[in-house]
Image (cartoon, rainbow, N blue to C red; front, side, top):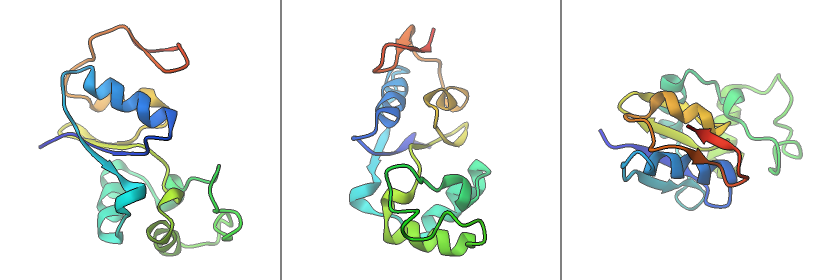
Length: 133
């Protein structure tokens, strides 16, 4: 199984996670989901394996989530999934799939337990803080 990162290149956390994966010597499959979009059949198993609900994966900051009325806890997961398909930016990122599991890697350190190998360290985030080592 290949390592896959659902990546937003404009997101610092996503870039940090991608750098951590590459620091292990792994060349991941990079899916720029803002360009490719999502389908419900993609999101549902990702969430299930990662132990997430659609609410857990909803990104509110810097998205139209509030203006679309999606922050109300009464909104169903099915409605949230439909919104994520219609507006891929609503999906929090990055999501990483490895043979060791699937995780929403926010903060960046959440990628470390699912990597196949530890990164060659030390590894710093873009802001200079340590990610590993």
